[in-house]
Image 1 (spheres, rainbow, N blue to C red):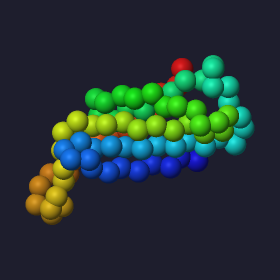
Image 2 (image 1 turned 30 degrees about the vertical axis):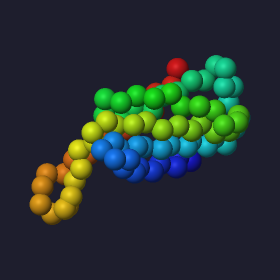
Image 3 (image 1 turned 90 degrees about the vertical axis):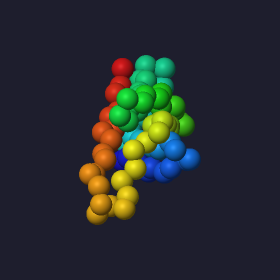
Image 4 (image 1 turned 180 degrees about the vertical axis):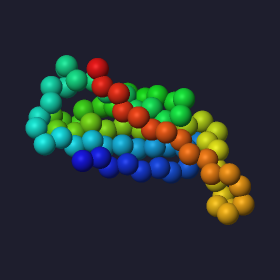
Length: 81
């Protein structure tokens, strides 16, 4: 089950993700990254059941006031290897 949140830190956007698994995973074998826009960051194992991490989007485009400009969306992906 994913837990995804976003926030602004000055001009940067920060996306935080925690992925929880039902069955334990081998942290040595399973590695993962979080990508948001062009920014990529490695996810870290908390324990055998959870991956967590943050990715920072430098100078994130903002969308407010929401009714006065084009919507800016960033695609986020998790990749495993």
